[in-house]
Amino acid sequence: MLKTILFIDDDKNIREIFKLYFNSKYNCLFAKDGQEGLSLITKNNVDLIILDLMMANLDGFNFAKTIRFKPEYYFLPIIAVTAKVDIKSIKDAKQAGINMFIAKPFQLEVLEDHINFFLEKKEKQKEEN
Picture 1 (cartoon, helix red, strand yellow):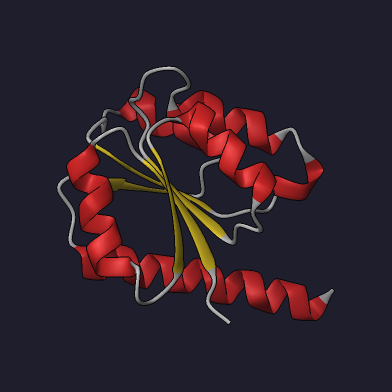
Picture 2 (cartoon, rainbow, N blue to C red):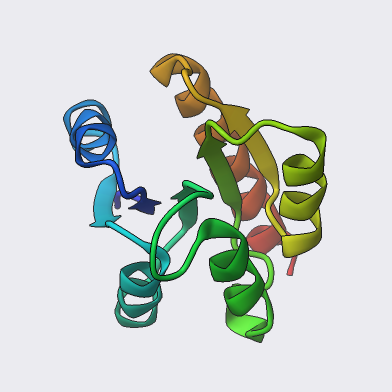
């Protein structure tokens, strides 16, 4: 069974690149902002989130903070993929509960390695409990 990844990014081109690269490997869901992401996460069993930080409506920082308050999403892996790479943003991302920070531009293969790492880690934690 394919793992479900929620990609949240306001850039249509980035969402399309994610779709072309990852759609055959995972069950992919796409949202254009954090608000749409919240809607999708409540209706689907999501295994991991790829999140842009700078978006309208609900940005990535506040999206992460919002879901971390809910026990069912507390351990859900979140990888931020963003152009916002200053030290303050990295610290804010960690405080918001984001597990990893990848700067744009990035290599899809590197992102895929990190996705697989977090999915395997999540699976091991499930087995131990």
